[in-house]
Image (cartoon, rainbow, N blue to C red; front, side, top):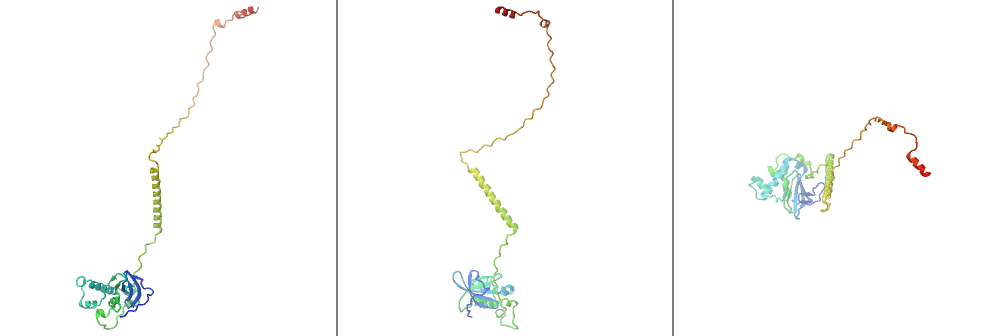
Length: 257
């Protein structure tokens, strides 16, 4: 089946793993096929399930099982790790080489892109319950319930970190302020210790001063003094002498005469 490349549309993945998606190659009921390019410049064919098929556990399991069995068969592990029945092995005979795959909630597979040969669309066939599993169709057609959900199944964006709450913001601000304060105190201590010259002695601390106030003087009451008795004059001292001149006076008068 010839696949004609068409431009990418809104909703198509820009990348799938290490491969850059360049164009659309095919659109099937179960998924999409894209033309991609690897890091080494190699052209690849990429198959992606639709969003509805990826949400259906049975459809996703059929897609993933087919990829794993084709990868194991290409790696030479058939019959040891994966037991494949003869009808299933006959189906896997035309499977292309699996280069890379993703088996999560949005699975995809990458195979070499070879024009004119089956590409990644080969893995979308077993997703639909049809001839590859139960042979030719019998009875009414089976229509999956997820057939209307035609958007490509893409892995969601990585979870964003939870925004900082007010409590966490305050804790961070307090921790930052504490770190700045500790750094400042450490710098001051280092400057005080190593800022002086080695020969300069450190100042000795002064002894503490104990101040003891003196008590105020207490007033003393003077004792009353008694008058001392006056001495009694003796009779010779208190007696009256005879009147007359003193010897000094008489001598003075004679010299004047």
